[in-house]
Every structure is written in structure tokens, then in C-alpha cells.
Length: 233
Image (cartoon, rainbow, N blue to C red; front, side, top):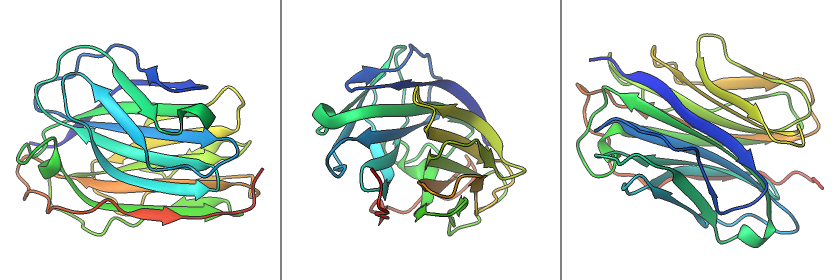
């Protein structure tokens, strides 16, 4: 059975805690929540919390891509209730922008706890003063697997996803400068990439392999972290 994807909801806000729109995910489907935050006056801590749908949400990976911006991907899997997902942070007092995308994947490996068997080969990258970013996912997997990429961008121009990848969401905040692009590839391309036209700002990306129902369970891992600190005000 091949992996299939469905976009559930996305949005932006200027503070946390914030809740998504109500969703009704299917049972035993991998849920991936990509979150981007901007802070004012301080470096972003790894203090994000995600709750909702009667599930346990586990951090997959995180990347700091300027001195005040950070992105995460969280996973969950089980028998969810209908409802909202709430995003909060220990940095709530200084968060000025947050973007999120919640996506659902069927046909995945359901072994392990909270989607641990469905996610493998997590990788991160961060860049500044350039017009492209890519992230290298270590394992190619097998037929029936897929790959996923979540990009976060600080740029005034549009962001273009690599050809062949299917966008789940492309959005910008109310200031039209913080952007998020989440996409996936059924053909298991292991180097998702994005490009843009303004090279003065920065970007971060998280990539991973989604293990299909017929694939081997993912090994346990510690989420990686890449930090890039360009001068940015």
C-alpha cells in the first residue's frame, strides 16, 4: 500500500497559545505538524508544546535559521478524536508570529509509539544570504515509502518548491515576509529544495522519510538541530 497525503489545516497568528481549525483525522494515520515562529529581542528556545486530538505529540526535528526564528516538525499517530491542535511555547511572551501546517499520511508503518515507526532519516539545514536551500535525507527507503519537507523562509519574495514535489501548503504571515512551504514526494526524492529571489534573508528546512506500511520500522533517534545566525533585525 502506497503512502498518500491529505492537507488538514494551516494558519498564521501573532501570538501563542493558538489553536488550529477543527479537524477529523483518520485512525492510524501519521500526523505531521510543521510550525514556524518569530520572536522579538531574544533567541528562540526549544520550548514548543503541542497538544490535542487525544494524541501524544512528539518532536521530530527543529532548526534555528536566524537569531530569532525557529521551525519544528511534530508527529502523532493513533486513534484521534475530532478537534483542534493547540500550539504553545515557553517563549510565548516574546513570540510575534507563528505559522503552522497540519498534514495527514495514510498507508504508513504503524509500529512503535506515536508514529515512531513511520518516520525515519530526519535531517535539517539552515542558510542565510542565498537564494536556495536543500536538505539531504539519508535513506532512500523502499517502494511504498515517501519523503516530506518543511521549509521556513524570511524573504519578501515568493518561494518555489522543487519540481516534482507536491505542495501541501504555501503560506505567508500578515507581514508578507515570513513564509512556510510544506511538500511531499511519493517518488522518495531525498533532497527537497526551495528557491526564492531575495538573497538578503534566511531559511531553514526539515526533511524526513515516511515509512510505508510494508517498510521496516524506523530506528530510534535524537532529533537533530542546525543553527545559523545571520545578522538580522
